[in-house]
Length: 115
Image 1 (cartoon, rainbow, N blue to C red):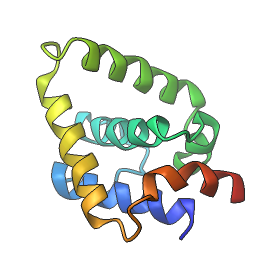
Image 2: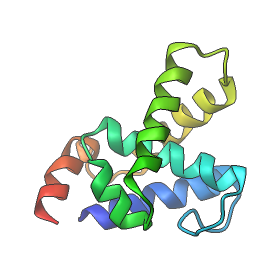
Image 3: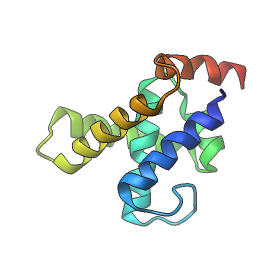
């Protein structure tokens, strides 16, 4: 198991939930940005640094800081974007359900160090 595989697994689940083709493309459509934001915030919650995400998605780190800021606003006040909260929980739960190792989310930070 490595970090790239886990990121790809999260991407695949998000693509299925949002019914999009590929989250890792340069397009800035609302669905793709939302999908990247969901995946990245799960990873950020588990200790992955924005610089690592920037390398994987070939985007500037500032995107991930922005995703984090918006995520915290949505969590703090769920009335702003209730659909985001629902999708975040759904993605997180589905990822945990599909994880081979129950401690996968805890191990993501260790994988970042190994990579």
